[in-house]
Image (cartoon, rainbow, N blue to C red; front, side, top):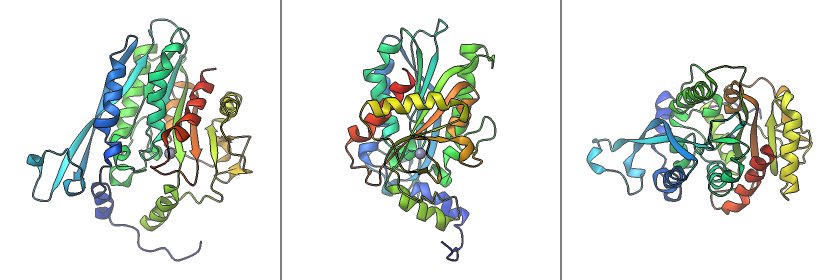
Length: 328
Ligand SMILES: [Zn+2]
């Protein structure tokens, strides 16, 4: 598209962007996800740890019921603080490989948190004889409950995942958490690493509107040449064989793997997009984890018809198959 770009957004518009979105009751972080995490934390062999908190400025006139109105200023703006949690599953006392599952990097991509929690609830315990597991169910609670890709300031936290110098509170907390866990479990010895991490993402219908808004705001656009359908994996080149194993399991469990010639305009290696072929990218959560893991992946479950109304199972099961594939 060669049309003349309009003026990029003002700083004030970026600041207001998050505040003005309403919390969607079915996605309320404190009411829908936190109770599941707390209940998991009470199980034997499971430990729920708070690794940080995130404070969001939000406009109560668009919020749902729960806000304490006494906190409201004359502008009807208030602050909401959410705790960030991870689950440690296993005994962590032996030299078992440790795998990491991450959801909610992009808040609107609901299957990440739902698959991470469902896996923890229904299947994780059966792996603990062989492995230790760490689960980050939801990296960005605010965007999750407002069904947004971006956090406050319209920052994409999956462009902001750095060991040092992240802008967003979500990624500052995550970097500290991963460093702390590595220090705790491996005494900070970088010759010892977690076995693998998998960060669960989606490419839903909403991406078309987001792309349009990003173009108006003066930011990055996806420019999807074709809308993919099914699951694919983004992998570091050296993890290609491991990625193939995960994708094969997704297929074996009966889920569609994206079979277009290209994935985000790069070659499709049978459901795997190799990092070296997608251009120089920085700040991805898989890159942050790769400092501490042997292998690190991003899933993308894609469907142009995928909306918040899509039945959970339809979007969650392919992600579960990818998690199981990592643990084969
Ligand atoms: Zn995503």
